[in-house]
Length: 72
Image (tube, rainbow, N blue to C red; front, side, top):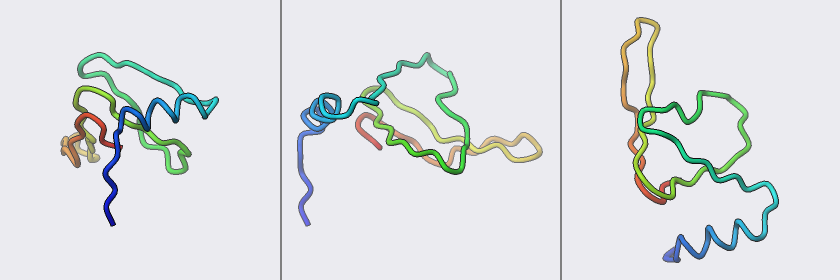
């Protein structure tokens, strides 16, 4: 299956058709979100980079995944 499409056009169409779209900006090293089991939302990184980070009980930090522009 070929799923090539223009992400900018998709985001624009989504913003115009969904009334609950929120655009947010974050500063470097700011926490974007914390773990919530039943979160009903789609997040698309439109610019920059972000890391999914896990902290264990001892405070050890592990980067689980790295996200770049247009990752969802």
